Length: 112
Image (cartoon, rainbow, N blue to C red):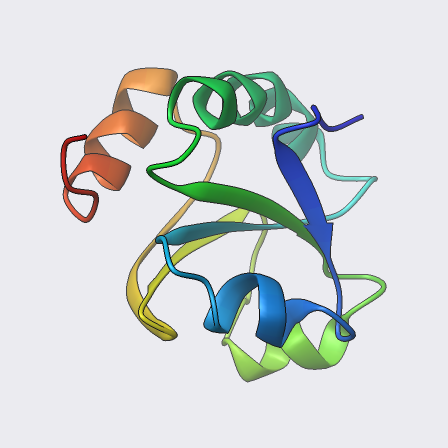
């Protein structure tokens, strides 16, 4: 489902992959039954490939990791939270077009 540039995170690797990351991380809080979540998956795959090295894009299944969704106050999906330096830098919700994701990400990612 995800490209080789989009990682799957869960409770076991969230700390290492997201909070301890050297680059900003966009976490896609999603579920398999969520239509809008499936709609944005190809866009996220594309962005992960294009922005590889500048940002990490990961997917977190809320059905399998409910405690992480609750901890990060995810009330609807898809929710996208951008972590930078181990802290929440920004968040947005809904199926966004690629240009909107780029604008959202670029507010927090330095140009290479």
